[in-house]
Amino acid sequence: APILIAITTPEGNALAVNNAITELSGYTPEEFIVKNMNDIYVDPDDRKRILAIFRKEGRVRNFETRFKIKDNRIITVLLNTDAIEFGDKRMILATVRDITEQKRTEEILEKQKESLEQKNAALSEILVQIEIEKNKIKKQIAANVDELILPIVKKLSKKGACRKNVQLLEHNLKSLTD
Image (cartoon, rainbow, N blue to C red; front, side, top):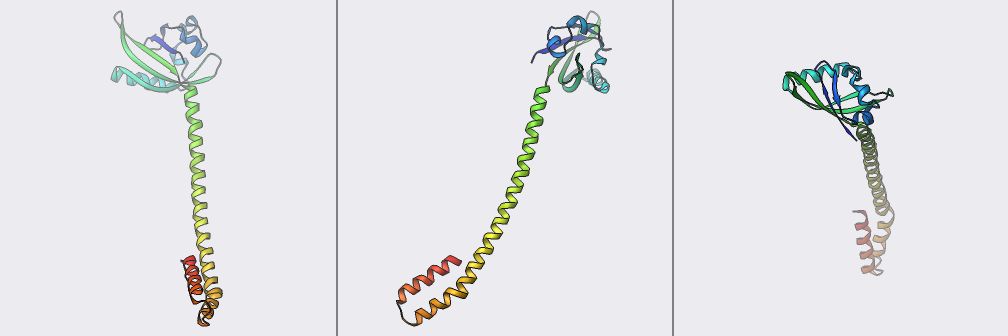
């Protein structure tokens, strides 16, 4: 994106602008020169805040604001200013970069992040529920083994039928339910 460079009076009158003004705002340099800077701010208080910072610090860095451009669209810009001497008067050297697309991309990414966080929370809850169900099933299997299979295994082991195999079966069943 082109970077607009402008020299303005503290009152907002543009004295000079580069050709990037056309791509940024739709105005030709000649059209822009006759405009007052106060007229392009969506929020007039932004201009007041910029001037307050400028008067206090002698410059402004990375001030995000919105401009209304020639075709009535609103763009988001990042503004930087420095004081320059123009003759015996103090003027403002401003650089302006259109960050509208960057802001849109950031908004999209933020929405995607929020969506992923919601999905992650839902998946975490599902995993908790799966763990609860797994434990219920494990307890049911253990109860079934204890109630149905182990009594039969104990009867078989008392009858002497392949004691070793019955003990092995009993051991494996117990390890299944642990």
